[in-house]
Image 1 (cartoon, helix red, strand yellow):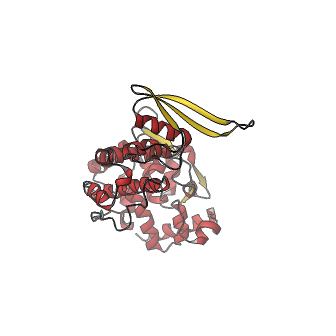
Image 2 (cartoon, one colour):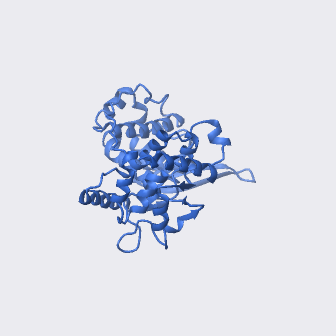
Image 3 (cartoon, helix red, strand yellow):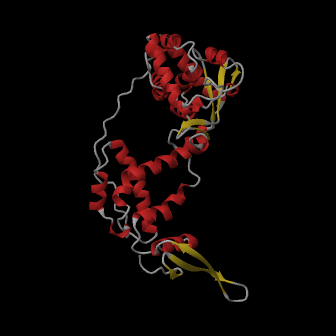
Length: 355
């Protein structure tokens, strides 16, 4: 590394350094200086100095391994645990082995293309690209790179879209009869009849469901994910925290199943089933009982598709699913009311009654 321009370092002995950094001036006009002893290499001392002062200009000659530890990892604070775990996994598996000892300033398009080409999965490749691009933009701000070497022209492997197996309107009634008695039935009905994300449905408590004018009113306040263990967290976005109105033919059974208290999908010990266990149990139930299997995440897509076929208002369907319709009106002006949500619930009920 080059000599730091934001403090000073003195070697005290083998693998021992003293660092000094300033924080402006005191009231008496003298410099306000601080110091610390660092045990390690010269590079460790320069990294520690950079961390102390939060220097905008990073030391020249910094490797990606050091840059990631000093500047990238601190930005994980405040992110969801699942997101942090995903970032660490992507870096440790697909980036660190190839760029750990590469100087940040030596990173160019050729190096980027070579590293990304080693990622076999097209979907994972895109995640790695996005993560590394964020780090490169941080390096630009720290003046280690003149520009970001990752852009829209960075070559990626073609994606092969997964064919979704949706729940057709004509299959709703036999599907509901087929899952009757399954311990995750309430969650599944909330996905298919209310458009909840799987993690939102599995995070429900029975107390989150109440009757409102013949409808099932579901309060979505939390989500259950799995990342090295179950994680009960806030909803995905502010728009995701919402009320959902569920009508016929789902409402009566949802209200029947929501009597009592506790998790909507309990495990054998009275706690919440993990999302992975819930999905496996549901798949196994369908196989044993000859029920058409529609993956939990595709039940939400089925909800949106059936509303589209029924001609429901897009802005209200989007709101019921926890996001806006992408318009300025949807983001800033249109209020989502129970009356509006009950209108699209009735629309879907009338459409399904024809089957």
